[in-house]
Image (tube, rainbow, N blue to C red; front, side, top):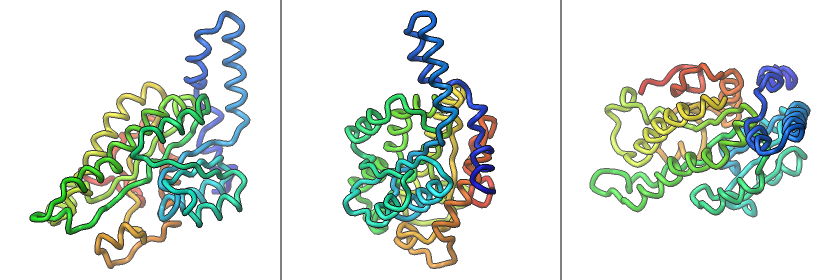
Length: 282
């Protein structure tokens, strides 16, 4: 599907009147309110869609950033240390529609600063990609490190919820979508005999439940909330897990997930979807 068809499939031209702009307009008198709404709708109609991606410095996040940049989106690619994100900075030099912003997803002040920088801007898509696996010996029975558990939960669970809450008005203004990257290891059915990886598995299960609650809260505001698993992807995280089998490239995974995101609607049940389109059992 070419760029124009993808953007048409996204359905931007049929998006509801931006909720954020409407909320601001309600405080304006008479014709001023109508003018505010009209200007907001006109601006949203003519602008390319915007995506915010966390953990964009490598792996799937970097592949997402490149994919959406190539499709003509306005890409806000975030990472913890932009000064060390050589591959991401190279992308930014190649694509004028891609900007790099600092965001440590575990820091509330960073999240607040990002929200302030984009206050009033419609965001069509928020991809909560940043995640950590953590050393396996520290999440195996007999050696469980609970400080590491807290860190894993902070990155994999608390951070995506906090960021989604902070940008909810922006996404509602665009009638957009919020995505979290889940994993098959969160499934009781698929991983019933799997040993170890306590923290990572528990964090992804908690993420799934949180996203179900978020979907319930944001659906009335026109926001689709999605859980997508990237499949087995050749990333540092997968290699750290000890997996040695076949794996997708980051580009293949990002492209497959982008297709699922583009076709998703408010009426989708919000169940965890694998990159190949299969619903993952809980």
